[in-house]
Amino acid sequence: MPTDDLHTPPIAYDPAVMEPVPFPSTEDSSLIPEGHGIPDNLPTKEPNQFQFFKVGILTKNLETTSWLIDDFIESSTLTLCFAPPESYKSFLAVDIAASVATGIPWHGLQVKQGAVFYIAGEGIPGLKKRFRAWELAHGIDTEPYPLYLSSGAGDFSSVSQVANIVKSMNALCEQGMKPGLIVIDTLARNFGGGNENDAQAMNQFIRNIDFIRHVWGCSIFIVHHTGYASTERGRGSSALRAAVDAEYMITRQQETRLISVKGTKMKDADRPEPKNFELCIVNLGITDHRGKEITSGVLQETNEQVIAPQKPVRITANHEAILQAIRSRTASGEATTRAVILDDLKAQGLNINSFSKWIKKLMDDGYILERNGAFYPVVKP
Image (cartoon, rainbow, N blue to C red; front, side, top):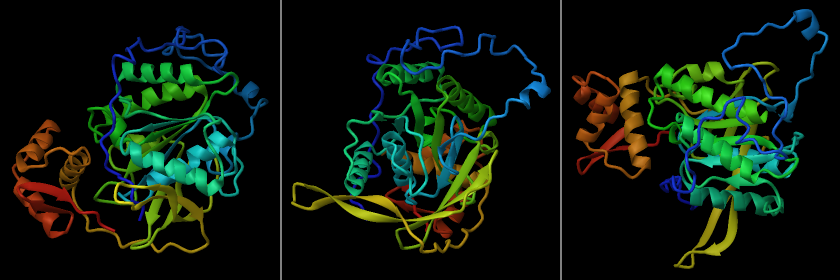
């Protein structure tokens, strides 16, 4: 397994550097500097003004499907991939991001080159190693290419933070090279303080993402976790799946480095055939203070078939809320005592009268363990 640290706390944005600005509207050009690849034909109508178009005219001006990655990700769309922990979600995102930024085919599929902004919510040191592994595996130095990694998470539920992100991208985009792809890894770490299970909070998240997508005409790729009750869907409100244009499920074969990437939704095209990958270990050419070689990994396509793990024991939404709270706080290095998790559940408006029974079931089914008064998630295959 790669030796990079997957649980390094993110570096927060510095408000002194990224001063909040008003949320840009279609009439505000202050955040859309001339010559930075922004379309000059943004709508002039108020966002809420309703319009109609004559169908007979629209049907005479049909456009063929435009692809960012042929048959896999369409241009100017919202794509979601989801998987349980340690299923190589970020390795897939890194692989896609580097291919789009450099313009090289992605495992035999043609790519439309464009600037890529990778907004990382966790594991920044690990992501740096993964990009380096990709460079070594492909023999490409990415420095000349428009590939950018954020210093930490962005709060996509916050209007001012979204404006900050647009402002930062504007400053980096080169002449004639507008953003082709924005990667959000993961949804949970870039969601802000809202509740993923709340449809209103999720819709606000989606609206803010759509603003960026429509301004730039770019694709957005979201890395997401599965629910604990089901590994066959992303966790949280179903409003997310309803909003995405394409969705992919990642399945890792137990006790191997093999994964399958299967399309579970493609709104306006045929679902592609599943792709199977193996995570191959790459020596990064550096050692730690003990002289131990530092490695990471890169995905290579394989014809080997992936055997899906057995479905987990079914649990309720209340159990899942506990698991999400424990996992989130564990990833952030925060306390996961009974009192802390109870407070998290109360903040979500849950009735906690059956908390002890929920905890017992999760422990009996092997989802969590308790050690020294704190709860810890158990990674299930």
